[in-house]
Length: 373
Image (cartoon, rainbow, N blue to C red):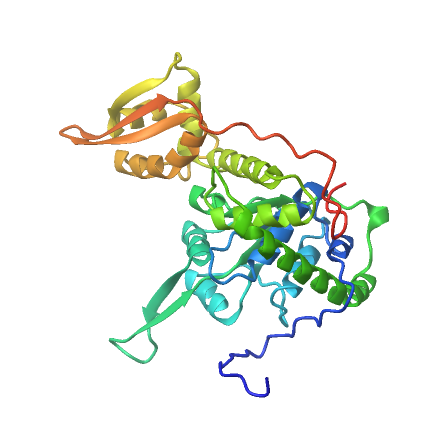
């Protein structure tokens, strides 16, 4: 078209996407990233989900030791979605910084994170499913400036940065292996090789997207995770790559269960509650007030008490946060209402509704390049 009926915003830092070429090959992507074979389909589904503005976006979290090519991998992935003059940004100082970055970028990208505040993790949850941030407009007393966005997010760090259960539910967690010293490449060769292969990879990615969209209407999920739209697209992507039906769903369910374990490991109340439950005689069926449970859990030592609630009300707030994770593990934490003594809770053992996932096999999945070893 000579003239577009739609106005586009072009920020000074934006860069063009590569021009796709005939004979695309998305399998070349793995030569320029350090994504392990068992996570490649997950990453491909995340990349393609970034192109869909009408569904929630999962957050991609890349974790690995020093020298695992986290930043290089993140830059390569971003160049296929939202190329920018500055591909990676440092840790945001405030929640407002997160939303300003989202307003000026399609993909929000942060590197070398050592931790995120609870407010920042809540902000990434808002970006994943859509929401806004409001603040007082400069030079006015009564007007409000509102930024409403929904954006894909990618984070990297040596340690896990998504620690709150509500963010972990939205995270695609990938552990990057360490690269041996004899397999390292210098930046010049890495950059030149990616400049050469990027158009082919982008063309292959679009071909895969087209094939997945053709399969998507036929995908029916009997059980769905929190990010069901991503799960459904991922199943279509896996089938387009030659994987057996249901294999992606099994792998994603295993990823979600691992995330539940990380959420509980990083929560002080969960650590104390686990110790208390181990001492109980099965089947577990405890009822009482938040104050009584607070006194019981206070007697158990945990390594870090910096985030320990200071009152029974704080304990109730924490119980509401960890209840979904425990429910997935077969422990039902239920608020029974209020009495004269305070908020009443029940902790009981339930039968898990999900079947344990089996790791994917080694056959299949060879179309559009080798996506597993």
